[in-house]
Image (cartoon, rainbow, N blue to C red):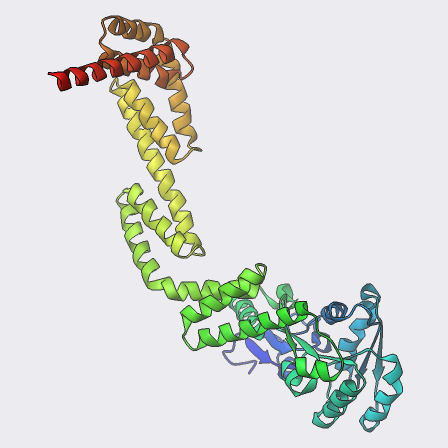
Length: 442
């Protein structure tokens, strides 16, 4: 295999990872679905992957949530891998006001009797991933915990159904995604196993067996039942998505996020569903927007890009292009204003500069050119003002009003222009009312 064309190998499970590591020294090996990755030779530069370990701290925290009076937790293991998983509890127990002990069983046949020895000093039992727990011994453990009111914790959801209080497991679909992303980075040459190392799952799922808990005399608080319900909803959403029922799956993940806004896995799936549901529409809008943009019709382009972001906010390229279209439109308006200024139409230019800044307030070129134009025109205000007053005195209010409005375009704080504009409009309205009355009377 080392001499072939293989550029990377994905190993599913610890056994496959160990075999691959034995025979491959130069080809990158990406492992997945592995408990206790430290059982592998992580010092090798060609090995990296995604762990499926959930920190025992999460189990301890859940214990506190179920019953803060719980103090003693026990665990059995029989292998080095089991020791690694069980040993983590020794560094986390006191933080959660617990006393934890992990015991190695060299003789599996002594399993039942070993349980009896710890019966009086155990409130909860942590079942590690270890060959010690075959079908027979799991049934012994399950019955023992139920009979003695001991909370049984496992990382395997299927065992909860068979008889355990709760399980905390990683999001397996997320592990697959993380593994694929790591593989893509390595194959693309942007990363390597020596850089990647081991990725730990950031999200987990809680599974409970309410009937088993009740038979054990354990009361599960509403907060725990709500967490488990979200896990069931999540699984239902994934199944609906995989069955192609995207609209139903969307409703499920939106419901999860309403209850748990920080649920990154649910958000990730919702994003994927939105992409699938809206792909045809957003692709059409994107093509249309790109054509408008290429033809410098920035108004239409911005409108189409904005439609895309409203349909699916996660299409970041649409948001980026929307901002580019807005900049293009603002620059178009600025250039038009500059042209009006050169044509001797300063007030039209000022209005167009204002449009440019209304489109994009951060257009510094438009802001600077507008300031320069106003500075030039401000020197002419006395002449403009006198012209306006002359028209006012002649009762030519329709002529006077635009003059005062233009002055205020240049200097909005000019008190004389403000007052004459107010009076001009007031007297113009009075004349119009008088004319209307005379028209009605005659």
